[in-house]
Image 1: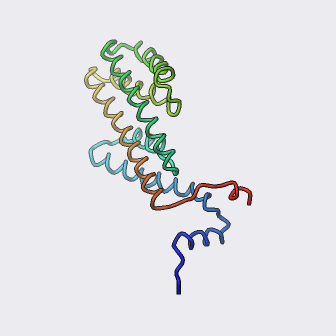
Image 2: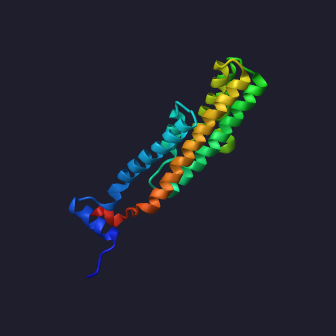
Image 3: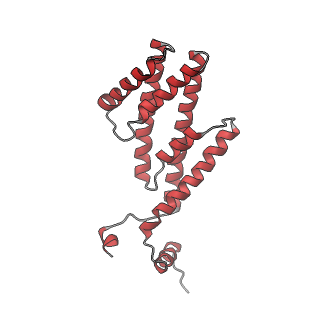
Length: 187
């Protein structure tokens, strides 16, 4: 007796339920997000971070069921986080903890992200990151404490991104879903 490969049996089962293989991409994305959330939450709780919402939001933003897209989103997000972090730190060093610095820094960060870096995907991440760094410093007792807290949030963002893309890449190897073709969509 010959045995059919597991993938073939799975495709047969999906066919019985009227599901095309490409319709499972949402299921894989849901599993990716659930696994990555569990990892991010537990790791950050273990190191004493009681509010890992930035890491979780970043993880979701950097996750994708398609490995190429996950890598692309990761790269774009990471570059824009770096731009935002640098801009936020520069403005804090130059301008100190004055209230006017936040809107000016965000506007300049948008200009840098839009006209110098020019990576439109996730370009909003640059001013968001600058805002996290600067606003944290403005709300704390000292610029140094604010910078440390702001950079901690940036580290959360990077950790969330790394976790999201890593889980996406691993799951794409464990759970193969073939890309749709014109033939798939015409039936």
